[in-house]
Length: 453
Figure 1: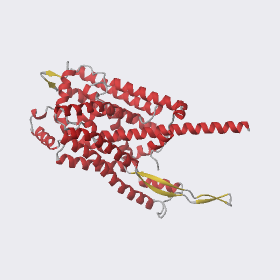
Figure 2 (figure 1 turned 30 degrees about the vertical axis):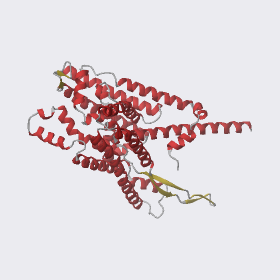
Figure 3 (figure 1 turned 90 degrees about the vertical axis):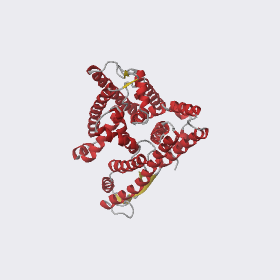
Figure 4 (figure 1 turned 180 degrees about the vertical axis):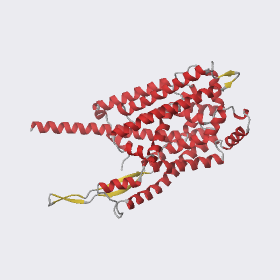
């Protein structure tokens, strides 16, 4: 079966695309929204000394700031109004999904249809504001405690700076949340994913320049530099193959007698179970948990503090450096854990089996109801093992290359995984719009022929 990219390439031609006016408007709107986002990443946060902050940020390489800066497209490094990017909204969405799976009232609200979905989305927005406010306040307090070269990162620290920082950063996060929803509704693709995608892609040219500079300095050898494009290409091809992989479960629908003498039904279809149901959530969560001690140490002044708590934190941080065996083992274990955990949240085998039973569908050789749910759970567990191993391999291999050869973080497994996944989803949506336009043209032609007759 051809992939979405192959189908898109086979159906896309200048004639069809030029007539798809709605698709062109959606693409232009998406491009305009991304440009607005990129402009906002260069608007500085008031009250910050950019020179001092640049020295501070460079001194904290290797912490969770690198990952957040990658997702924000350099907004954190420039300390702009979009410093938190859309990450609070993603965290609030994940928390809301967890609460929905554990709270019967929220689960019942989810099943109410469009009205319930709107209420859950509103709760997610409130959670975004709450999380962004806490993170913005923590960022403001942390900036006040930072200094480099004899100067403070904040020009005039105090309550006024903290209030303005919280208002500005929370406002920027709310704007990005709204912009992402507008892209999803009026553009092409998932708005939240495209904003993160744009941030990652925007940092690739800088990462390439950094690689060339390291080669000029002699830090990276010429064979390593020449091998990077082939490694990245191989990782991309592997990700595309695994993201498109699925286990198809055959579903049979029984025949029914209609009108006393006519037999209908008896169709057979399949239920696709993705190999990687959890997506990019496991690597993001695993990285955040592992790099959190390093970030806390960096913001609190590292070893300059006193007390047994600081000593324990510094010891943990020392053993969680990239390239360390403990770091690799914990990173892989957390990816596997979150892969199973998130898959269990987004796919409920018992609920799926019950829906099949209501509509008369069944898996050949499996009794409807609980037996079908157990069978789907058995299949999902097996393919999730493969998916977790795939995620671990994609994320650990670049980590090893980064620690051994000092390759920039933008060529890491998480960034490539997000970029490829978003591109595949966006291309599939563009292909769907083109097919819809072709079907509309066929329907109009059929109506015209019928009217002439």
